[in-house]
Image (cartoon, rainbow, N blue to C red):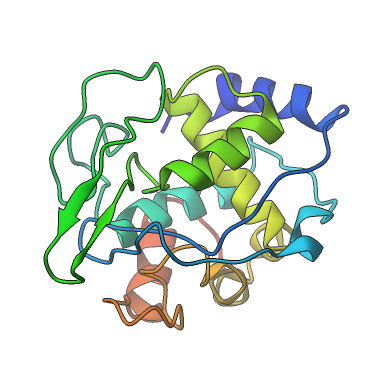
Length: 202
């Protein structure tokens, strides 16, 4: 996973003096898909002050777990170049912003990358962190920012992964309890994926 140097540097710059962003309840996976139409503001999460530690093995494992949940891990460039539905895109210059028709939900989605962020969600974290592109390091930093906004970083560091998943469930539709009416993974399978990625449970 491309976390440490690039993503950590981006987050260090961002957290030295950046503040606001727009948050939407949005996520998607190659099997569990959320569209671009839903969402709402979560202002409390914007002001969550947990600071990401990109060298933390639990955080790295949690990001891997999200990729497993979203169905992207191990596909293409380890998920970083995967569009919703499973096809790939060819450039990391920016979020691909491709609208893909999802027959199972009768709507379009722009979800892309390892963490299946829709374009609007990506724009929010990109602007907040001043991310330069949609590279793997930028995607890692963006996903970590979404986790931070949900107030889940301290739970992850403490090994309370069930609690962290619960806090992030409205961010990624494939997490248990998301409530988007889409496929949700079992908590037990996600905890196994987390441990397989080197994460430690409390």
